[in-house]
Image (cartoon, rainbow, N blue to C red; front, side, top):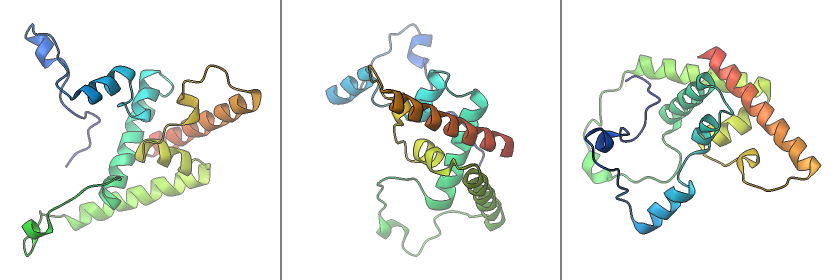
Length: 164
């Protein structure tokens, strides 16, 4: 099981055949997409070139490690009856232990840098940081705080990029 930064349906398949791309979601989802509300904060940071491609891939790798260790954050459901008494899948315990060790090392390095909370919130839990919010005018103290948060976030991603 390898790591990839590509997610979702491949882009441009309809356009490649000469057809126009059509949003097949519900009206509510189409409206959210038009306003840009369905994109994740880490993707927005990459699109606005706030972070480098190396920082972006290391953030996704960190999220992947978190998912391997704790499962996907958020609400999910499984049918427990379907798996009762059966092996869910083959699990290479040595490989899993290596990934968990890699995750623990990343957490420790981020903690030492003082960036664990902000990196975890943005990359894993998809919290929208204040420095990405569309506010017309920040006060001087808010602008200073945004700069500090952004610097801490970038420093944390630099630590991850060096580690991975």
